[in-house]
Image (cartoon, rainbow, N blue to C red; front, top):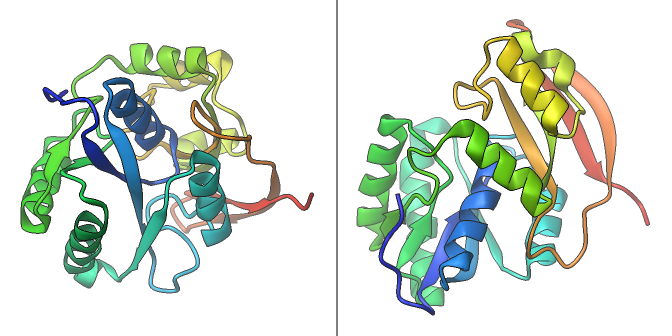
Length: 225
């Protein structure tokens, strides 16, 4: 759901490193708003993102390619909300941002949480993709040249690890009954290129790890130049 945005509005992005946060950032910028900071939450080790399992160096490379500074919070689930609010508040004060952009599509519980924590941080939650068609959003991503690598996947989609999201992969997701955008946790992605990147990320695919439930994780590192 968009906002009536004044051109030049400064905004922060809740940055997972994946396709939905990337498209949300692009959508906000297309309305004339200016991205002034990214916020990513890391797991307790401080080495990988909590949501997508992306290493710190890849997330920093994405931010550098965008030319937007990135901040990191490190927290266990028990302290996640408090740390998120602290980091978002610090970013707001440092950047003068008034909005925080999220890539959620239709999970109401997520939106409720986002609006709550943004209020605590003195920000307004902005969800540019809210209630839009999955297939239309994916078609827009492909048309924009957004390249997203599948880096984690549920057991029923684990064969797609290491695939770049394209029409064939999207068709496969739909045919197997998965949510095309992965909104039910079917998969997560790492953005390798998108509008606004000064250069595409070159990555090296590493080991695959699997949970007892069969959820798969693909290690991705920056390729040496």
